[in-house]
Length: 251
Image 1 (cartoon, rainbow, N blue to C red):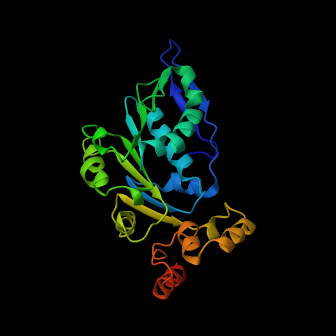
Image 2: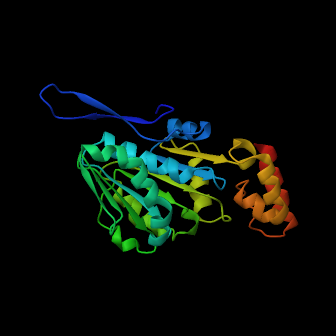
Image 3: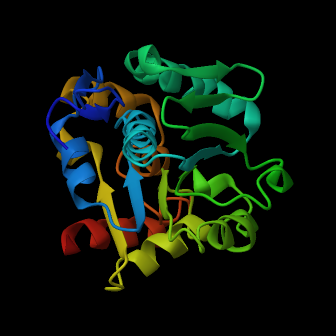
């Protein structure tokens, strides 16, 4: 993926011309690092305002544009969250593609592209709405606050026949199911990739802004939301703070 994401779209004409379409997405350096590193199953632990939703939406668009008749899904913790977080991004970044054909369905939060590919937003609060579908690519946003069975019972089987890929994105909320998939991704499995991005390392948020946030948040809140600590949820615990400190020093 280039610094300015673009798609080469084949149009069936007598001259077999290929149109180059520029998507209005310019990844930050760490986002670009993610795009170049993803595997079939990828887990991104990102601080707040990293830009993970924008990154994920553009990964779905890339798959849908490059692979005709593909089916891609963005799964949010609730359908309402998916509409408020992802739908506007999806419409904005697919706008340049719509001149080649396709349609939008506001009721079903669905984009159909020129090549018969589809990108749709779902909510994990209604997991049965996803059952029976086969996906080429799935994004699971804020998996830490979803029921674990959405992954194990629904999404994992749904990508099996197409050998589809899955991208987990989110911020920690203790040692729950999100930590489990991140831990699994870091154990060297060939089809898995896991990476953690702290605000103190990415420079996405200015230092002064981080200092202001730190001044009004508890140490545990700050460590969880901006430094992506899985242990900070042991709120107020001296033991939890020691683990967090040790984790950082180990990196």
